[in-house]
Length: 314
Length: 97
Image 1 (spheres, rainbow over the protein chains, first blue to last red):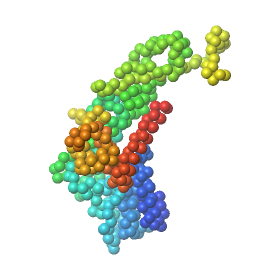
Image 2: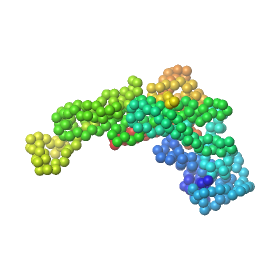
Image 3: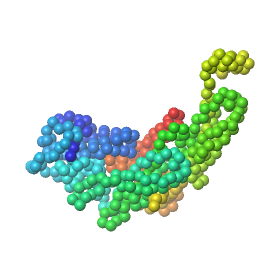
Image 4: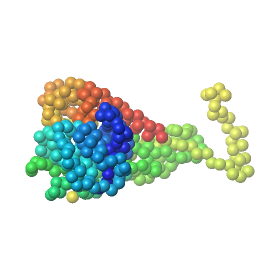
């Protein structure tokens, strides 16, 4: 079991006052609340802060915890000495922190489950808890629809009442045309219910993996396509990739860099909701490497009366 | 056997009863949220209310914010609006890059 340095977690000294503890916790809770925070480990930090506060806000628990001394470091291997809690009463303090079911082994072995009651146990709902998870899928899976096997870690209570996590595998159909940020609800796939009641639901939020070519904006797929100056000037038919395969795209003569072409229905489509692919032209100028090539540019400069800065009056 | 979920988006609708069941809250909580403008259902009376399934996330987030950060209902409505705006700005930033 790993030692948890509750003072370090809250970022306070061991001599902090109860008010300072409260302030430090509230600040961290706002910063790392999973609904608000974009930090990668927000959920874990939020839980840690809740656990630390659960102990330090209660003078009795804090005194018992302090007895271990200041020489332990976060993550040290730790076993509480026998009868370490003799003379302390952990009662009376209401539960206010994060979700007690997520508290660490360290907390549980010291203070047990009875000292902290989860928020959902307080209400008398017997239905299992809902679970929320984010899954990252390739864009192509959103375009075509796909089948995925995902593994979620799920807390399980073993016969001795100890909470561990175990991997839970699910085979999920990703519907065609799903959009980033959308959620899929899987009924009855959340945590099991209490006393024969139905299980909770599982909510999967969709995120897209970074794609080297495409990026999605809601239903539209954006792609930047490099073109040569003569293709842009004279017009051309280009082979352009889409998530559904290559298509031929005609670009009109006199196209400028940054011009956008819309390929109808080539984005993320689900039923009547049609997404398009937006192709942005990027004019790439070839480097003149030989004297002959440089001469070509000089000829253009002579024969094409053109001032790109005319609008600036320069 | 692959599980088919229900997509929760602007096109799918749910009733007051659905919303209460899905979010595990009594109807009074939803009433208060509608009064606060945190939810804007279609339909005039609670029996006719139809929420988009995006409302499910708003209710779930509001309940967590109230519990975890002791934010009151007007504060939740404000936080949700600001979070949505933040999300929209992040999206625009991604598109520009």
